[in-house]
Length: 143
Image 1: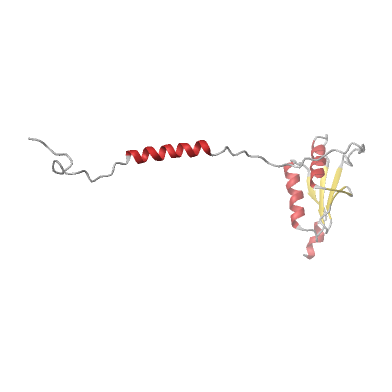
Image 2: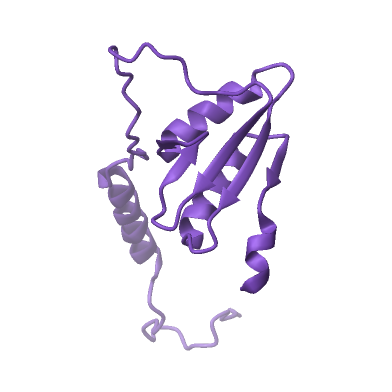
């Protein structure tokens, strides 16, 4: 007496598809794709500041307090000297190394674009400025 496990009669063809070769082919294709994909390199382009060898004057840093003002055109001034954000970061890094640390007074014009003010605030945050204050807030009462 014999027993049939598949429930089909002896001699009938098997109607199930054999997926083992399909899985083998898919795994080989996956490995080939992994090997042929180039490794992605993560590069960040940086425009590093270039020091001017002709400039021998020390930065205009006051040991007590430094004023950062922003005019309506979006120009940033450090103690009444126009600068860019890179130079601002350099000055802030120098002030944070001084002892005692000088105060930073930020005074944006009421008509200045918020984008420029936000960029200045982001630079001061990245420089870990400890002593900072806003000057001239009474000008904003009319707005």
